[in-house]
Image (cartoon, rainbow, N blue to C red; front, side, top):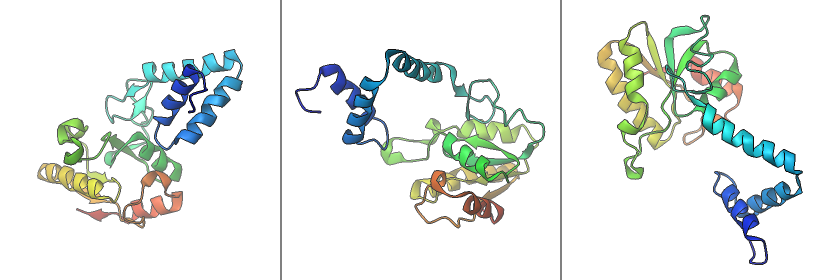
Length: 200
């Protein structure tokens, strides 16, 4: 922001700009908007940020974000616990749940393998997935990572660890464009990709 702006306003805009997908012009608009809000609304907004950061944690089973020890999906007795859909992040769980067609459970890796960026297997929730499978009762693991270089590498790596355990490992049949992002796919495309998944 220009030098004539108050320093706290400049800092606020810079904080907004540090969020993904928000450029400096959008960040400035957000900062000015906050200044037009009444003080009570600003405090509620700030408290919502603090509460989310303090109270949201990873599910003990699937690693999805939840405020409970076990998320509602893992805690649902009507879900098919024998099928686990492995995704990169919590946003992908939301995308699949929008289809209302998948009745299995999930496992969230919280990232994809990317040695160039220092993201190694130890930094992902792969160990937790292997523990779930080793505990028994799992028939199939669906690798639903994005069709990118990192997504494919992660799917192949995890599949290589799972196959010796004697379970079916499949990959989404992507009617999605290569390099596409699951989060932005429509419900029908996601459902078809899920329905036509391939063995790995």
